[in-house]
Amino acid sequence: MVVMIGTIGLLVSCAQKSKIARERNAARKAAAGKGSQLKAIKKAQSIQCKVCFQTFMCTSSQASLQAHIDAKHSKLNKTFAGCFPDYEAAAASSTASKKASKNKAKGNAKGGKKR
Image (cartoon, rainbow, N blue to C red):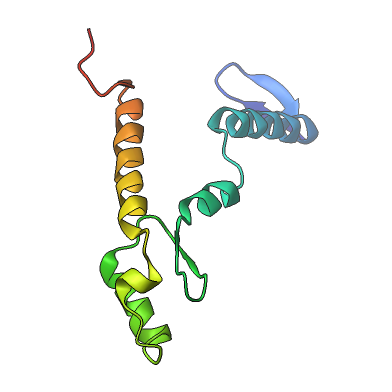
């Protein structure tokens, strides 16, 4: 079977059409740089409960972490500071990295105005 592609009027067989589509999709994937997000997710798991060693995303709110304490450690009478002593440092680094990535996305690595 022969198929016409585009307005140029090239006659291309189905096998050639599939090959062209595979090459085009491979080029798109290479340009996008998309792949597995497992490394990025593992990096983002920066908050850790010091009692049970469960990890949480760096974007977790204090309310959700308090819910974890209430659900898992209520019998131990643990406080927020007892479970997450380094929460403030993790939250601060999370907001700093968000600001840096926003500036980088704008093409403004230093955060100042472009000249």
